Amino acid sequence: MSLPPSIAQLPQRAAGLHDQLVRWCSQNSGSENFTGLATMLELLHAAFARLPGAVAERVPLAGTPARALRVKVRPAAPVQLLFSGHYDTVYAAADPFQQCTLLAPDRLRGPGVIDMKGGLVVLLAALEAFEQTPHAAKIGYEVLVIPDEEIGSFGAAPLFSDAAGRHRLGLVFEPARPSGDLVQSRKGTGNFTVTSRGRAAHAASPKQDGRNAIAALAEFLTAANRLPAEMPGVLFNIGSIRGGGPATNVVPDFAEALLDVRITHLAEREAVEARLRALLEPINAREGFRLELGGGFNRPPMEVTPVTEAAFAALQQCGRDLGLAPFSWVHAGGASDANNLSAAGLPCLDGLGPIGDRLHSPDEWVHLPSLPARAQVAALFLHRLAAGEIALPGS
Image (cartoon, rainbow, N blue to C red; front, top):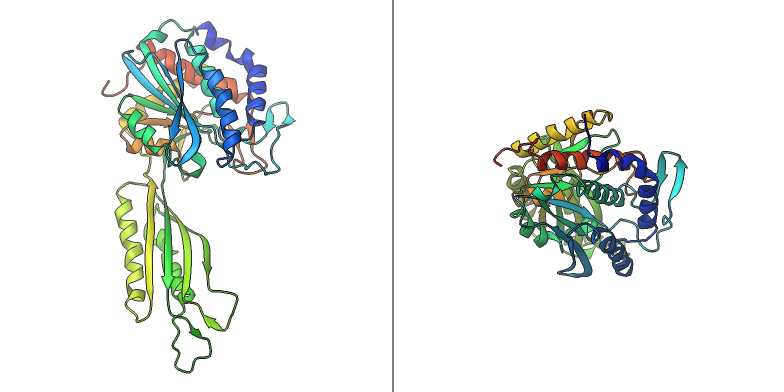
């Protein structure tokens, strides 16, 4: 198989990709560190703006001083693709985990090395290589890199809705699984609040005048915790509980719980919410109690489509032709911005980033050889799509 030289030579750039990753990960960009986010944005702007013909802009978001990076290349080309990533991490400015450490010649530990500054390194390398291939002019694209993915992408959500309709396929450079597999589909996520109100009284009231809000909330949570057994494919987690006060001789009149609920199919959303509300009814029917459910689903599920099936098969073939270890794709419980793009009608390939594990922990690591390898896979896919060797359903 003959490879364009720029793609064939990507493994020779391994040292440079490693150095770039260390530089980016050494800059803290926790989701609430707005000074660090601004510095990181400038690093990314300088790097992506060097793509041939790129128009790079810093896009303001509602509800946050942080800005997204949007880069457009050839917006009039016949095929339009969207590349997505995020540059915020879960590590705050005061977190002790701030530096990268080489654990072995092929393994680097550091904040964001896999989630997902490593993915941004892979994305940029792939685009740089693709731009030197003979048919690059046939594909135009938009790169959208946001600063609030780790806290729900609430500010960036309108950008995804706006961009989805302009593109044929989304490619999301979240990390691959530790096995090297990509992400086939993702659960949708919901964040709910349950507030319980009762009636305060002395704990020793002979008339039992009190209505214990904590006990009522516990009754609801015990029933709701059985949801996964009743509805396969649904995940339910009680994240935190608060209520009552310092005095144990007072019947508490308030309690609250925060819930994380995940679904596999969009059709499950209404059924889950209906079931949660039904569990409130017998408690609310009792005198003196009032339980209310707030919140909702913020990211719909990412589901498989004929377009993503065809695109993944072509991507797999690229990996085989490059002589890389075989990879498949799997369902993931965690959400990403592919959920938002998919909900807006854009088919997405996800998990195109490097191989690693232990994200969101001080043991986060990346397999360094996967940086140029995954860039090769993405660049070869783009080259073949531009050359007309890959056909997507409906195109």
